[in-house]
Image (cartoon, rainbow, N blue to C red; front, side, top):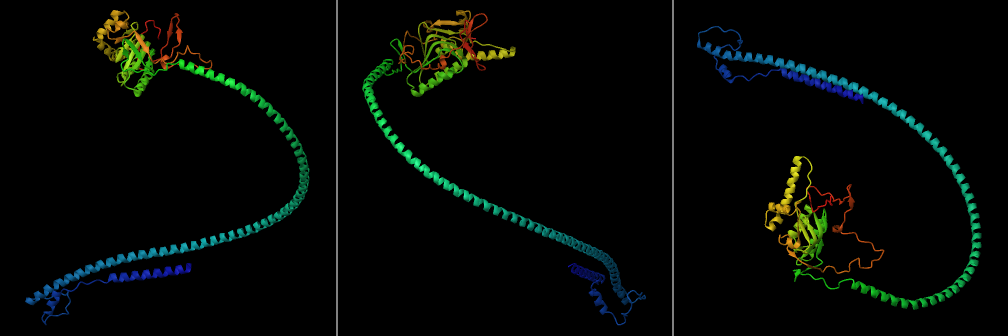
Length: 509
């Protein structure tokens, strides 16, 4: 294969050298421009006396004949053409020289490529020899591995044969033991069959004995059941009497007349309160508005024709925010919300009473109006800012009260301190009606919602658990300070909220 490649390379080199020489010979032959036809025609018209063999560059003799002038005019273009041909010949020679150098360089490159290919062929031959030697070594290694594997397999086969013979012997021994065990089991089965037959006879005798005892017991139980049924008739009669008595007591402990609802609850000097009522007592704190407003919405969703009663037995006021939310829901309720004061409505509770759609009160019930209670902490700027918030709440809460009274907020505040040095303006309900704090004084309030006997009169079972008090009935833990004064700690209000609370003895702190 390498010899053939060398021969092909030599042939290619000869073809390239021949093509190079042919191109050089073609480049050396100059191309003559075509002769001028005008000169040829002029030459054909020359006289016989002219000498055509005279060299072009030979000097002509001077003549005064007119024909001599025409010959000179013809010779000049020919000389110019000769000069042009000389220049072209020099240019072609230079081109041929450059082309020859170029071909010589290319020929040198081809010879170098040839030498390179020869070296590559020799290197390839060496690589093939090296690979062949490696393959030969690999072959010998594989043969040795096969011989070793064959010897190993022969050894394993011998071991398997020995193991097979040992297992066959062990199987024979196990078969002998199995047959002996089967024989022993058959004997034991026969023995147990005899024992079971004997035991079965004993069981039959015991079963007959049990049946006899059972019959005796059934007879005794039937006699007892007969006596029990005889007594049960009397007991059932007593139970029915007791149940009838309990049902009668339950009936008597309730008002069994249908609930009466009136669109106008103030009838002939007395106020009739239905079960559409909400209690507002003690102190208005965070959560009180939600308790009251949920019930107002409930009664509205049930019926919008009949009034809702907000019952204030004893309320000292409290949170301005909570009170304002109660007022908002009262004013926007579809059913009218009437306030009923029984004992005391102070501070925020008094505002709710005054601004209600309609309000009622016992003659001896007391209403208290005073300025808002606030605490300010911080620097002068912070205290001023807190006072601004207090003044804004005063404007929003107290201004409608003063407007209903027909006076200004300044006049209202002035009258507070005219009535009391502490600014706590207290009036009984019969006097408060004149100030428009309450709309109607009523001496007879009839609560139609009380349809069950009060709990403290009923005989309650010991195991009955007391219900947790409602939110509005919650109590606060009473404490004693270092001076022996009793007090109650009020819960912390949210920011920008204030206690609007009647607290002359500093009991609520």
